[in-house]
Image (tube, rainbow, N blue to C red; front, side, top):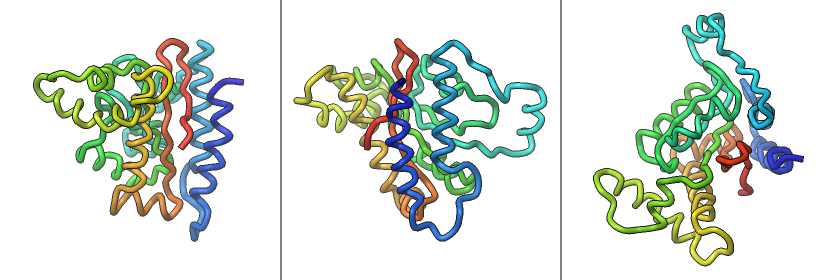
Length: 220
């Protein structure tokens, strides 16, 4: 059983819990179905059996008139972690926002709000990854140059949260950063927090393994 399958059951329960109490059924792809699609795509990718869906000229024509992605991914800008590839998805399937260290700023937050509120996407995945260079810079400390200072500053709380934990400090910081960003998104008012509270949005954290290709859903 892969880590995706093991974690998927736990997160599905969480996603269902998020939907409890909503006054009407969700329109579009519900969180648990979106997670299933991502899980199946990642399994194909890991097994070197990617199907490369929704990448035809017909699909290009179809989405030219409008978009309806089934999941949002806030990921790192690292060239080794392209969500459409590691989840085996295509044009119009994922709404992706990528920045080094998957840190959150106003521009990124506005983009996520647009996808969740205006496009009606019900699943938001915060995707960190193994050996993240931005997180590593924050762990090592020292004086960063240029705008990299902003990234390091934004990642410092994750580094502090990882201190003293058993295991690899960098990987602990990567996981802590994902957890902190998930918390930020769930409590971001007025848009995302209200969507979460109303059962219209599920926010989950994940970690990509550079060596195996496996995406692991992280426990809340």
